[in-house]
Amino acid sequence: MAIGDPRQGRRVGRRFGGLCLLGSLALAGLAGLAAGRPGALGSAYAAVSVGLEERFHTRVPAGDLRLALGPRGRDVRVAGEIGEGAAQRLKVLLDANPHVARIHLTSDGGLVDEAVGIGALIADRGLSTYVPDYCVSACTLAFARGRERFLVTGGRLGFHAPYDPGLFGQVFQADATAERAAYLAAGIEPGFVGQALAVASADLWIPDAARLLQANVVTQVVDTDRFPDSTLDDDPSPEGARAAVLRALPLLEGFATRPNVLARLAGRYRDGYFAGRSEGEALDRLRRDAAREIGRAVAGADDATILALGRYLHRAMRAGDTSACLGIGTAGNLLLAQETLNEADEGPALLARAAGQGAPVESGPVRAEIQRSDFARDCPGLTEAYAHALSRPDPAPALRALMLRKVRPADEAFARP
Image (cartoon, rainbow, N blue to C red):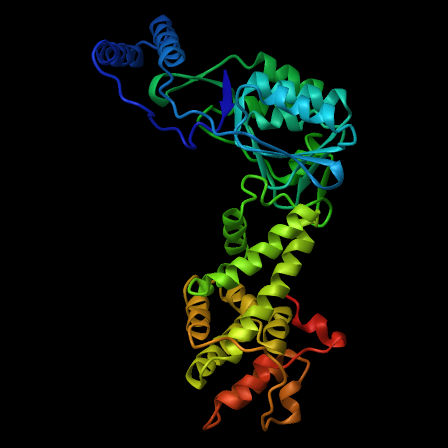
């Protein structure tokens, strides 16, 4: 029996000929009859389909579940589809590392028996569980057995009824007695359990955090600075780190023509992951590193590009709230400008334009004739400073001064998003 998200990654994995083709045609005919007579014939069709799936394995096999020991031996990262042997593999890892306290879970489900086995290991050893992103379907059976059960702010837990996989990706509702017992044994509210298992196998219910806390599914919702980062659990390779960096900061697509810059940023991010930095700290460091690289690229841009960037920043300052306005205007924060405007193309295109103009230079103080009021510490003053610079016959020097000036430590709060 499986309990995963049947809508994800399910494709016919192979072709059959001869007798198997005839069997499939016969099964298709039986399916047509079953559609009109859902009783005994429908059950017979389901049994035949499930049996043929067990015989021929037409579904795409589950990917390898990744189990990794986290920093200082206190966390185990579990990522991927829960397949055969997952519980035994986790047992071996836990036996070899007795100081593990938490299991990080990132999974779209898998086999019920294996998920229940993982849950039993968690309960027997008094471990906590933590979802840093998503844990759906069978994964929740493991999560629910944690002594403490943590969900990151914005994380997702997804529920539905278990299913038996049939031939060529077909899904048949299965008996949920074992799942119901497992959830109830974990102390989850019976009403919640009934609602979760009433969701059709092809659907997914993702309750909000308030409902999860009320039903005792989750014991605490935590910020991203609480536990070691798990964003690379499914792929900690350099390529995986690069993809994670671009997901976190899409503006950096503008460095596509400078792969060494992206490699540098991804490498630092990956080092932090292995060192055990929290996700919040890792993202803060990434933003600072990225801002430094962006500053170097902008410092080498020509006047026309500086003008385009100045107009972009000015538009973002006017579109954002006071906090965003201050963050964008104080030090030319292109990252925050793109997030404020929420536009997929213009920000990366402008950065690519700047990055493509010769070698980047180290950003530093830029001399220009600008009025003292240009360094205002309030949103209207900053917005006016950019407007004043843009209105000049030769706007580039004043815009460079506004975008590239260094922020003193006492002023750092104004530069943060």
